[in-house]
Structure formats: structure tokens, C-alpha cells
Length: 301
Image 1 (cartoon, rainbow, N blue to C red):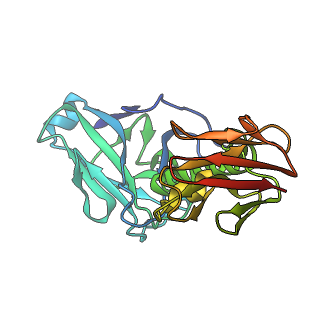
Image 2 (cartoon, one colour):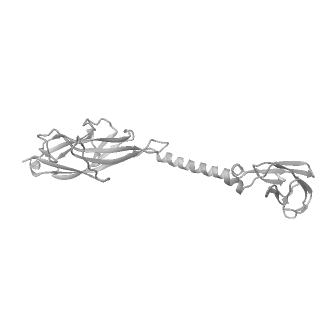
Image 3 (tube, rainbow, N blue to C red):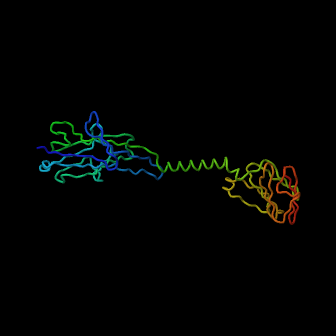
């Protein structure tokens, strides 16, 4: 009578993948893909454990003889895995030397949660190895006669370590791209449509004092006022400059803004009159603005 152990490796997180290899006639199971990313600022990668359920079943004779098997994770060429970045877990407990024992004294049948963890510094790409029998007191494991066969491998395992972009870095790139695109659209297409600017020219004050205001394509508004005012920085950058002409004769603000073509719209305070009557200043024409105390002569050229 033979002491027999049957081991099945099934997936907890991924569909079971079974295929045959030319050099290895057993089953191949794919643990899946571990995605990781490089640290960026305060965002570091949390490693996850890829899991499979390992089911075992001793026959009655092996149970009677208190048989056991020591199982070991080995590398692709059946060499010991020395890279500490690859770790093996049994029932969420880290296993030393990637080795664990299945003993019939503990249970005839049972299920172990087999976990594989690839730390971020583990090499990127495909990796594989074998689950092999290191020691045993059995005759058969999965129909493999251990007394006559040199084959100690039970399963081949595969996994993939995939480098992805740090999510914080990716989010910042998306935000930066969105903001940059929005700023380009605003400054190139929208700003001057929503806040039109003056064309080149000059506003001259001919009476009761002599002064002038140069017009350029960055000025959105001209205010004739009696007291200095300061435009907020971001308002100036995102909408355009407000040009102030300051003199005590302006007891109420007179506002000039771009009109159609080369015309300039003029907004007068209540009680103020303009001669000749107009809501637009035409190029090379003179106008007299009559306030409560002064008559102001303006020419647009």
C-alpha cells in the first residue's frame, strides 16, 4: 500500500490557468499581475499579495503512518530563491526560506492560503519558478512515484511585475495639462473676445489741462478719475489692464471702453453732457464733456 498525498492549487483572486510545458509535464498556475510604481513626493507604493488556495488530501495509509511533505518555492531553474523581494505567505503569515510543511498529524484534508508578494524593488517583468518537494515520507504525490522518479516539482508558478506611473504623479500631470490647456485657450482665444482691447491710438485732454493717454492692445478700459486706484494683479493678467487718468477735475468717473472698429464707447456719469451728443468717440474728432464744475475737451486720434 502506498502513502499518497494529493495537492490541488486553485485560484482565489484569478481564474485558474493550466497548461503543459515540454520540460515540465505538470500544471502551471498563474498568480497574476502585481502593479507597482516608483515613490513620488509623499505617495509610495503599497504591495499586494497574490493568492491561491492550496488543497491537500492524505490517504488513510499515509495518515496511519503520520506522513508529511515539506514543500518549497524555488526559482525558474529549481534554485533557491535568494531575492528577499519575493516573499511567500501561508495563511497570511510570512514563511521563512520559502518553505512550509504539510503534515498528516495535523489534518487529513485541508486548505492553505498560499500568498506570493513581490516588493517594489523586485525586477520588472515576467517571473516564474516551481513548487517542489524538498523532503517527504510518502510514496506518491499527485500520481508521481517519488520512489522511482527524480521529478520533485509539483507545480510551475508564474507572475508578472508591472511598472505603472505613480498615481499622484499621473494626477498632477493630468491637472497640469488641463490647467495649461485652459490657460492657452483663455489667453489665445477667449480673453480678448470677452474683454476686448483698444487698438493703437491716443486720447488727448485739451482743456482745462493738457494730458494724453496712449492706447495699446493690452488696455481694456480707461477711467478718468480724481483719485488713484489699484487694479488687482490677477484681474490685470487674466482680463487686461485698466488705465487710469487722474486729475481733480473729474469729480465723477468717466469710463472709456473699446467699441466696434476704431470707435471708443464713452460712459458718462449722471448729469454729465457731451457735445456733439454721442455714445461713441470717432477718430480725429473733438468732444466737449460738461460736468457740474468743468468743461473738458477730449480728442481721440
